[in-house]
Image (cartoon, rainbow, N blue to C red; front, side, top):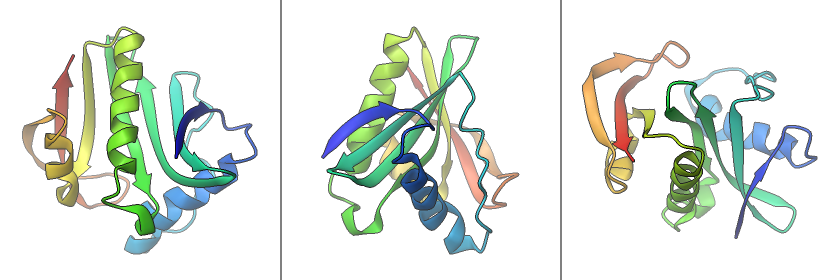
Length: 144
């Protein structure tokens, strides 16, 4: 598996969009959305690829306040628990640190909280429902 930063202009990005939908939206009955603000200049797109196939994705949004946010983490269900998601988180945190962030944060679905704890993320605040998915989430932060 290779982990590479890419852009929405890359031909593999269509696979990214379909993977994100299949993993994050379709299971909860949300329609496919073509626009995920992929062209925001403060966004870094990391893909896990094996040959021409995309198997994982994570987005890093660099804040202007010395923070970075991880969003839209997803891994092909056939490869879960195989280290792909862990590698994506490590790469995104390393990139955030390299670009000067002092804090990385994310909103974790309840089923993902333990996963992020392995990397040192801690829960901040109480449960809230995501405005996008309406699922319960918790904010988690990692100080760099």
